[in-house]
Image (cartoon, rainbow, N blue to C red):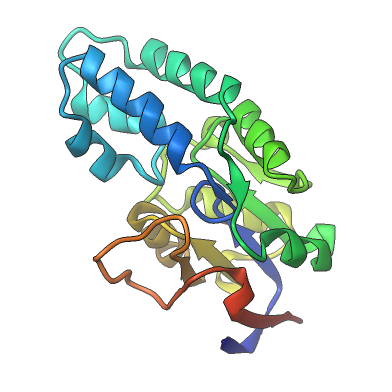
Length: 208
């Protein structure tokens, strides 16, 4: 059990891989797109996690591809497909204990998709939900975390961030937050650039 001594003003959560395990859906749909578009699925999946879909497509799509149109298609498929989405252990219990004004979700998913996945996992929809369309630059840019902290009436350096993917972890660190990596839904051989725990049953912290 990891116990944090510092007290925080608020808690900021990534969604996919952090609060919800959506690996099955994401990997299936992105693999189908990659194969249909002549892209190496393994290479795409290796860097897609934690990033906005459109940012990933811009790195891999062939010349002439309308990445905004393709990203919208992928997100529509993901919104319609919630089979296999489950909460990360301890997530529901933790969110039920946090005051609604002291936590937020910062996700690379669009708003409709985020609400759909949180609901499918049986988790509450936060009062502050920062999504792909709310920011100009996706993770590892820290703007999403700064925006969420501002909407909660605090600053990112006073917040605890839970993440899972390298891009998200770096976004939290770039924002000046303390970051904890959740490993349950993102098993990797790469040691993250922050402390790592299995799930939310393995940590204790407090708000000030």
